[in-house]
Image 1 (cartoon, helix red, strand yellow):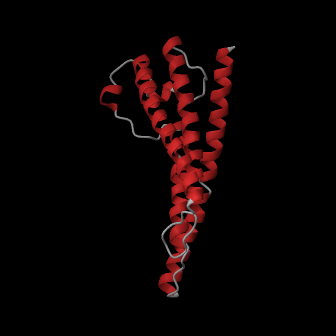
Image 2 (image 1 turned 30 degrees about the horizontal axis):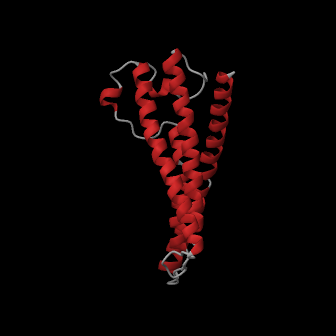
Length: 185
């Protein structure tokens, strides 16, 4: 029963993070368009915009932050392999559990701080210090969502590695958990 619940959780998180990660990729062409538009407006028509720089910063921030959970899911983050590659898969799962737990604590702290910053931005009407001066509260909402997704993915990864450590088997056969962490060993 518990195993089924964990499998369901991990599958749901996998699909959610995969959907968000792939969806965020569609912002890239919009970001490229905004940058090209600004370059053309500035250098060819000598008429720079007041909004393109701020918008491109926000779009890049959204892409970077919202892609974090997807990068974790696809194991695209940097891994220090000096000791990691020289130990058994079960020991690797312990390393993973420890590092994912530290990352989870960090993500939860960011969520907590971002919620406070959101309320502060609303209360004091924080705006970006530029000519366009867009509101800043949306940035903090995005940080809560991004770190929330990352937290869900990290919890899923911790559960998958803990299951592997205890049983020596993968909980979800096609999930990118311990097999990819252990480089197929």
